[in-house]
Figure (tube, rainbow, N blue to C red):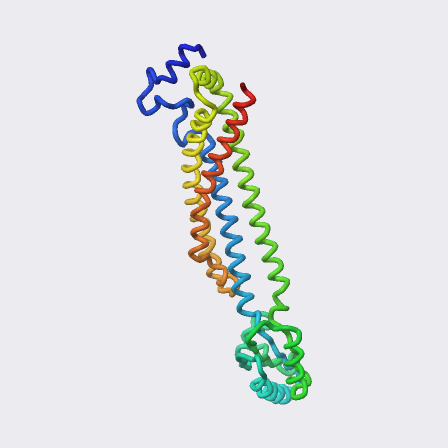
Length: 310
């Protein structure tokens, strides 16, 4: 490009008024960059929503079962099992630290084992496959080993076949797996942010190389590196804002569809994993943060390249 042409371009001769201050002749939302950012934002929002849902499910489940204790009366003879369960309930009623307890009805127990044994199998084979009596105990605080021992000292003398377990122990492997998935989702969000920054870096370098002659003329006319970087930053910002909005819209569609599918399962952990208003606010911040990251990356990349150019 000649010096005369570069000066005419900077002055805006022969260009529409809306583009007389642009160094980079690029239309808004053109090229692959907005759509790359849209994909990154969509994947980031989905991964973040998954991590938030897992966190909500783990927190709600832990709060619900942290003080839960299950007493199983494992006695094959039905009459002895019923008598021991009744005596265990009476012994636990007067125990300090117990917020509530409930002897689980036989109908609920039959419903629990029905998916594995089939309808009517539990009553038909009650003698061959005895179902333990269950007592659901709710403590005022977490179920510590000392409290479990205290419950055992109360229950075992009146119900020798009783077995005492903290409900949190049953689901500890599940909680550990869910926490691992939550950490994975956070790592995925970080990796996607790094990928977004890398894509913007490559795009800024490409645009800088394509407009090298114009930038040199700008420097000859007294333009500063900050002014040149601001032009690239603004161009990338428009693309990131448009692409981020599209990406968030796509992510919301996916999240709502998946939430509707999972809500039909009727599982307790799934129901507890519903997103709250603060989670939706964080998801709404994803395109804003992506735009800021893209603009900052573009500015730093251009400034660093300009220092090496001169």
